[in-house]
Length: 129
Image (cartoon, rainbow, N blue to C red; front, side, top):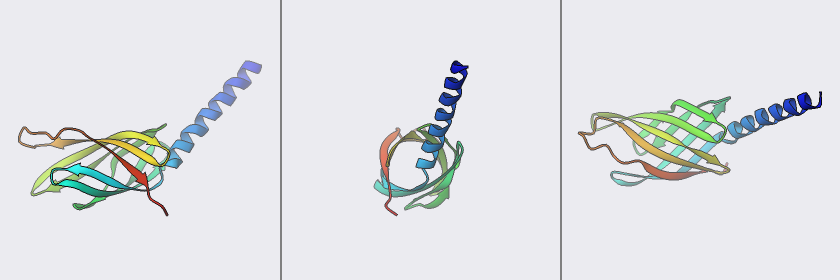
C-alpha cells in the first residue's frame, strides 16, 4: 500500500510540474535575432494549452501565427511561415524555457538556391507587463 501511495504522489507531482512549465511560458517575449540584414527585433506571444502552444511571432516582416507549437516539460518547439521578396520559407524554432528566458535555435526550411542559412541561437526574455 505504501508503494502505491508513493507512486501516486510521484505521478501527481510530475503532472503538476508539466502544468507549471506550460503555464510558465504564457505571455510576451522580446529580443533580437540575427538575420541576413543584421539584428532584427522580435516579439513572440505564447499561450499553452496542455502541451499545445499557440500565439504570434512579429518582426519587421510583420506578424504571423505560430504553427505546430508544442511544450513538453521545458522543451519548446514551433514554426512560423514567412515570405520575403516572393520567396516562401518556414522558420523552425526549438529550445528550452529557463525561467524568464527562452533559449531558442532557429533553422530555416525553403528554397534558398542551395544556400540554406545556418542555424541561429538566440535568447528572448519575458516582457514586463
